[in-house]
Length: 173
Image (cartoon, rainbow, N blue to C red; front, side, top):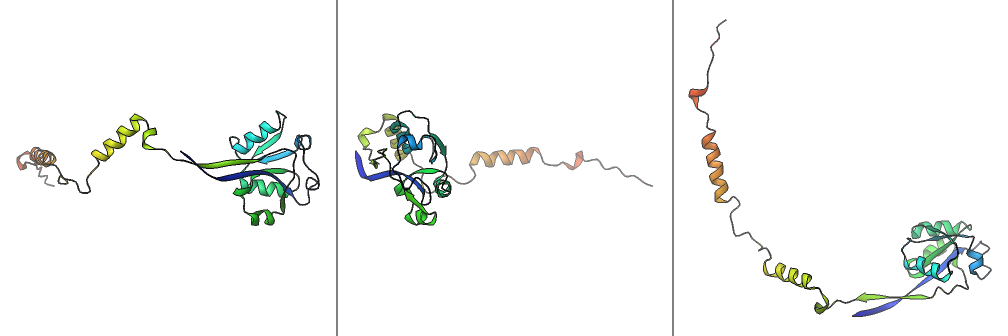
């Protein structure tokens, strides 16, 4: 069962002093512009690639903190998920959201609740075995097993030093 929790919004950001702030960005505007984005496999990166219809974009992967720093230079744009960045950080780096003709839209997010019936047979058997044969709080056996005690006793018996086998050489000077 899927439980919807809300929406995430991908936005393009730029420095307040950048020339992109005063215009509405189009695919042609950003085609030759460096855009700092999160991980390659991030959903926002996949979506911008789909929306730009196979155009060659200069996408560079970075962390969110680095994206904010580089976009604040005014020489590059940043693609972020609005909800992942604090508004204080946008103010600190003097950044604003840029208007675009590219419909980045919103992404639904939530959690998936897995019922017991949806689990595989292997998982069900493993969890049943763990429950049935789980370890007790206190071990039911002593710390040293009797067989170990016997083995120790036998080793000591075989390795007892016999005084008759020790030779003493008396050297007189």
